[in-house]
Amino acid sequence: MSIFRQVRGGAGRVSVQEAAIRTGHGNAAASGSGGDAVLLDVREPYEWQAGRAPRAVHLPLSAPAVGAGLPSHAQARPLVVICRSGNRSRRAAELLATRGAEAVDVIGGMCDWAEAGLPVVDPQGGNGTVA
Image 1 (cartoon, rainbow, N blue to C red):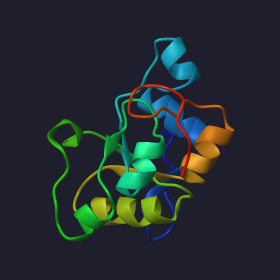
Image 2 (image 1 turned 90 degrees about the horizontal axis):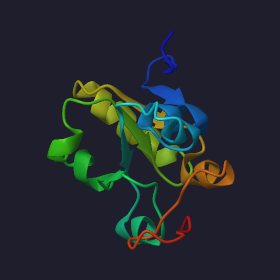
Image 3 (image 1 turned 180 degrees about the vertical axis):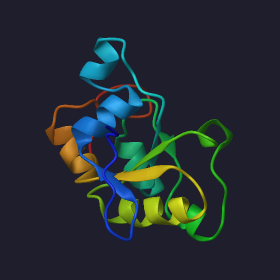
């Protein structure tokens, strides 16, 4: 069974726990059973600078909205799309899915990610915050 849930008429959605497993964060990383998906963070630059998940890839929602491509290390890989609360990531996942990407969004976004005790780091690798 796939960890991706398909929503009628849109891209799939996953919980933060499912996202952590799929992207190799949290307990999944500690056990060495990390996934192969890329965590794609579509928040604005100031939000990204305040705190992000380790190994996440940054691509603000405005970039794919105007047709920009994915960074090279995110191409041809499953995408788990995250934002602050889940609204922008849902739009981004739907947009990317229409372009042929395997993309799902994270329900509750970085707010739920941090609340679940999953790692949030700043640009230097210290403790980050969700802005």
